[in-house]
Image (cartoon, rainbow, N blue to C red):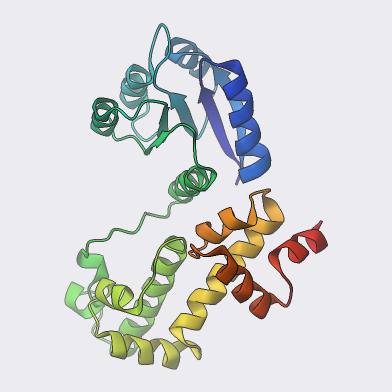
Length: 259
């Protein structure tokens, strides 16, 4: 699904660069509207709709904070991303008051912006971000009072583990962390996953990361080192080694063959 974005930035050159970054480099989104300040943005939204708004903070007539306040009154669920050249905590605090989706500082990091777009895409598609805190949904289903069949419960646990992995591919995913999310002993989870799926949990995580990397290589123009970070490999050389071992070609060769 192509994410429709309203881009609000008072500098035309910056808007143009942002649009190119979003559409040509990151992909999966389209800037369908542009405005130079909050007032123009609100006027544009009277006759148009978008999935998300990306706005600068410091602008004439109406700044990004006031725009976000008005947007939350009119469209409470609209994702809003604030971008600022000022690392002023006061701005961040104001943005948090209105439940900003994210707050990025200029110059914007391509990987951080890509992660924000992916977060918005997940929200639009109905996938909730994974919390680092356990809630009732991370407990074994029998403890939730949902099922009392151990086999069904174990399959539900595996499904939950796969959901968590899919949502956290760019982060560190340890066996201990996953076990904590479903309230199981990590050794038991390891055996359970192998029994249910026929593959090691670590191999499954690697497979998911490489599949995501292949998708990013094919459908974006992000640099290989950026893609490496987006799929959970801070060390680009190690990522390239794992990719070649798994796919049979380097990321660059794979991109060349995909076009």
